Length: 427
Image 1: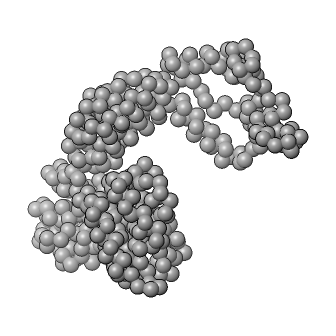
Image 2 (image 1 turned 180 degrees about the vertical axis):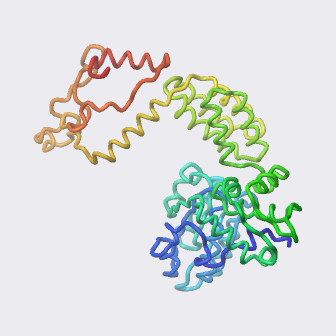
Image 3 (image 1 turned 180 degrees about the horizontal axis):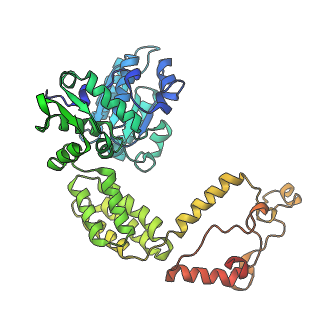
């Protein structure tokens, strides 16, 4: 029984596929594409264990076309070109192109991604990329523009329960054993919506020497927690609970605890986390959690990101640690974060409000005749570079979206606004 349970249960058809109904359910975009027999290049973006690789295999089997796989970790530009050359020889007139599946495509370098452009553009291959990282950060724009992007979600509770039921009833080994699934809370909690992780936990627990009478195994939350404490890495291939660890890292920075922040960063480093992922999270934290209380935090976080890109690893851990401690010990404000979210909510509620005529651009005579730009007051022509005029749409006059928080930096901004806008801003 050397093949893992997750591999033994890998779906072979769309009907066996669990989850992602917004993509593969009746009438959904990917199902329609697959059933038509013609697919375009696309990238699947989602957390681990939600079916990205499985979906690529199902598509290849359904279309009955050559299927090539490259690992972004071990493959170079030469490997990409070799696959493209083979794909050119495999193409037949009016037949779907061979599929090139690249797992963890975000780990491909720019030159590796550049080498794909021509083949994707000409249809030599149909590219299916899979990534756990935001493609807008990691996939070059020319390649991203040639691909559709589909977002996969963590599996829901019902999906995970269905997967457990299938494993116990259909797996060639588990179905022959006396297994009672009495409680599922701990298994679902530890899996975090990851099907592979869930099946790894089930396999670990059912292999446990703890059993009931006549060799029967009764799976309870207590048993699951006991097994995972004995073997905490067994349910995670990388030895890290990716999303839990990064959550603890960011919350430690937000909570101004540099010791905890360094600890969680060390956990990520030891677990093999991509340093760029850590650096990106620091940039986000600098903007979201430190914000206007210390605007230099964003500069330092960006500098740490640049340093990691330039000097590589393991030295890159030092600027990352420096930025982590700086952010954790900085004053905190999320006023800009709350402000933009309030503005987005207001826009969704009120629709496309017209721009006040004085604020409109008037590059033509017709626009000027219609009153565009008429009455606009140029702030620099007035004392203190300030003049009171209406900037919000008529229907939204008086709405406050940004509220200063108590920090020396924001207090200074607030006092400046009071001097400019006076009572109206204070209200």
